[in-house]
Length: 133
Figure 1 (cartoon, rainbow, N blue to C red):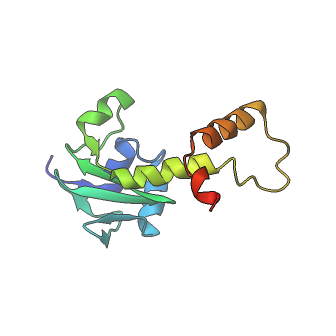
Figure 2: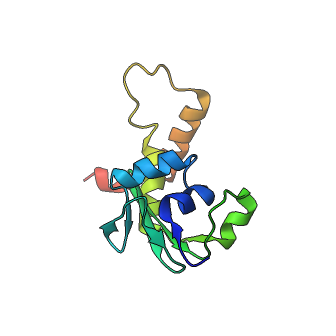
């Protein structure tokens, strides 16, 4: 197998739950290769890097092998490698931390877990000295 449709490959390596969702993401321009948006019918080759925009970050995956049938989750690392830059993953981590700080109005009281997470975040933050100036 030398080439496989990108929508089929992304579904088979479990980047998307269904092939139709993968096709929709491609049609909306959320998937790029070398900075160029691609169509669902584009064939991919081994060694290409696929970038998927899922706000707030862009994930990057390197194609290690091709397949066109859905596989078990344990087999996925043999077919793709996550090469997402560390700065993108840091954005995701920061957003998850700020999720409980910027509580939406009307979501109710914070749970004990939310309170503990907030206290741990505040205790770990070293920026308090800068605010005193």
